Amino acid sequence: MSFVEMVEMVDILKRADYDGKKAKIMAKVVKNLQKNFGVWRSKDQLRKRWSDLKIREHDQYRRIRRVLQKSK
Image 1 (cartoon, rainbow, N blue to C red):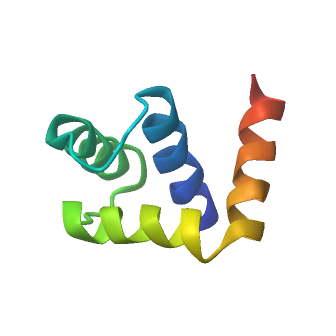
Image 2: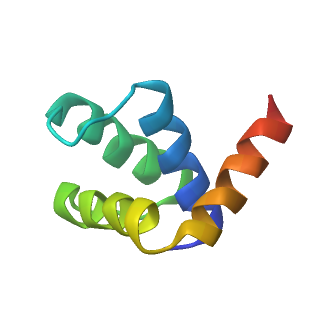
């Protein structure tokens, strides 16, 4: 998953206050990634990626948050 795709995913999930149980929000992420980048990812893949970012990849998650803060 590219960095730009992850930024898009994190942006949507942070705005919606995603807690891992809201299927509509994840469907929105899937739809936006497909529309904006032409890639199809399953909801399970995105859930796993979101979990990995928050738990294991703190540096990359901080970097994404900084990018989002600068864009606002």
